[in-house]
Length: 461
Image 1 (cartoon, one colour):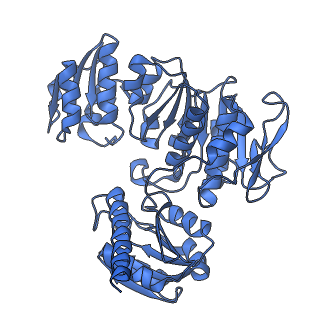
Image 2 (image 1 turned 30 degrees about the vertical axis):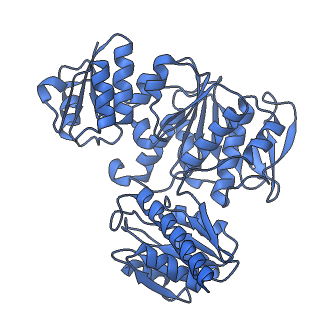
Image 3 (image 1 turned 45 degrees about the vertical axis):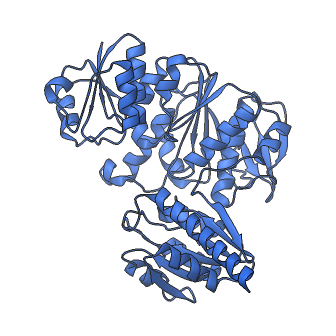
């Protein structure tokens, strides 16, 4: 077969290398410039490629196309391929054809990365041969070339699921479904939900579906996707209306009830050692623990490894404590729901730094939390009008800046020992920063500079 790969970043180059390794001819086409690291991989493999354009005569030679998840259906090259009837698949679909490993696949609007990294950490610490792949930035296809793992933990976005057809996870996890990326789904929450539910479409009685029983959108749309799969719902509460796989007993303990046919007994398991903050992370832990138990990990292994987990940067990440004030970087909170979880999860008084590129946000759900927990709001954005309108009469103090250094120093001045300065923007970052990582790094650096300046001042006194 002849493969054309559209997009030459992590997933596209991984797919190209796998297709070539399986004996197929390959051509790679990217409408944007290709990063040097990926050019080197293609050169080393002798795979022909182009950048800055799609040469349609070359693209149309494909027997099958693997497209980057970032390319929308409305792109002219995709429309042309659809009209011709050329099969279009995702890197995940291609990789799934060539591995016998058990894939634990995790999706949801929020919490995917944390749950993926935690599940991977639990299995890795237990000595399992496990790979980390997908939306966390590692190509599943490239790892499948050597296929040395018995398990893969794979973070999947709705975009990556869109072009899967026969891919069958051993465990699928659906954390939540809230409005996001609706421009890719004709502004339909139902179509977005169905994209997420593709994760379970090929599962059968030998597979497991772990999902959030507290999420109303999952409940509304899952019935249409019912399959003969073993269901393990989880909840923050012991709910009599569900046969739950796991739920919280109190703040520090969960109950894992795997039901007859899974494990022989109900277990109480402590999560007290975990450094994760917030209600959403409590849900993430339930999902990860269920995956770990299904993979055969024992209670003591899980409890010990929860305490050694370090989450990815920019997700409720502690970045310093100065004069009794904790600074937390939650720059990844680019939507309202993520910011809600952050505000809800912190029990101390909060000086909140928010703002950025508004994506049509409705801040209504944040108003009660802001009123009860936020002592000051610092708007860090180019246009803060909607934040002023939503919270100006709710928080005791509100001010604006376009400087991350000023935001940190003003927040510190407004905070007292025992308070938390929280960067949880509820907005995209593209007005003042390259991306949310850049925003988070600049925030952490500003906190470090502030701490250093205080230390020098004290030394000079």
